[in-house]
Length: 294
Length: 283
Image (cartoon, rainbow over all chains, first blue to last red; front, side, top):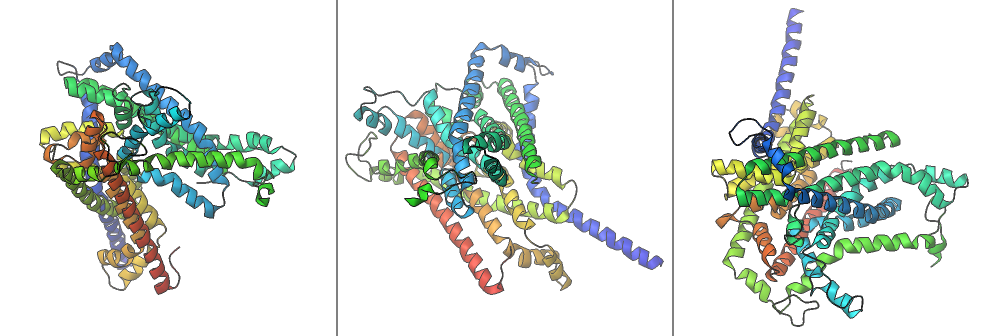
């Protein structure tokens, strides 16, 4: 009897030991992430609270808020991010709706087309827009030949160019979560609405659209939060005239090596990001409870 | 054109009345795909300034790229960094995914979340943070330093993909192998790994492309003789529109697609041979 208990205990211990050993396989990955992401970012966090005299202070944040030249950067960042999000919503909702209505076999091809740009390097796509939008570029020359406008319109190295480039990059990030939310909507609801006499348009606005709102919210938040941190596109397509937070952080480091101010900006960016991601999680949970999907 | 009159949805709206939706979707999909394609003819232009369509054709921008020691060195750096990142991220990520799935520990969820942070933290913060840390450690402008950051950035995706592959795989097969005398490592290598091969392969290809395309961290952490192709391109894009970039862009795009196609073909061949051998493939 004692021997058997002993045996069971030993087995249990061996199992626990093995589980911990298996868990140890996670350590190399965890260590890498800790060393090059968590530690450096925590260090920036620390630097942002370090005053000139080396003690804890909020002066970096004060400086960031008080500096009026930074206000324009905050406004620009918000303007670009909100505009990108709104344009993605207008362009992306019908596209996601179109994809969600397709039979599964055919949707695969169109989803592949949607993801094609993601296979292309971000820099290559930015460069392509630079080439197309410049004063002697294709769009201007075609528009002038067609008589739409007489002299070249400045489409790049400004807000417009930045916006076009960012929408091009962000659109799949809006469409994909919305598409997956839409495919989860019970289609028989639409048939039920129709059988009860609803006009197709009314059925869409009163049944389908409200059910798709959590997907819209999730997609919009993802686009918004990714847009806030953009660096490459405004730097190239904005031509130095569109300065967003990430560009400002770089400029502060390049010009003044002011790690405190740059870190404070980074911490604000990170906090906004985390809040938005929590909200995305909420939106997805709402859609999950609505559609009964895990 | 009879299909236009047929109902398209459960609300009996006809295809004809939804034409606007199809056109709208087509225009937006074209907006996503077409702009990049214009780079291709541009790269064969003979003119100093980019014009469309090019008036004369030449290979001068390809010659400019292939003949430049700086561009060639940057390309070599990018390929080395991407290759090493692929090995490190796929190896560490597969181990981590296996550990998380097989150990079934409660803190696995928390650890999984921590492993996803490189995907959540804005990349500019990772770039500046590592730039600062590497300045103390003397790791800036080294290949090892850049590979470490790129590995961390690629890890979340590798772990998500491999863990998804492991979830459709029946772990009891390993227990069978072990009851027949295989060690845990043997069971993993001989039984599990071949069956999750498609996930591991996709993860490897994606982590290669992530590193090869990465601009922001590379523009901070890489430099000098070890500047990557993306850093070099980014720097020259900020100065002027250099047609050499059109040639490089075309080559990069073709290269990315080739890698993607090879992956698709390998996966499909694997699928077929498995179906032939086993009779019924895994779900």
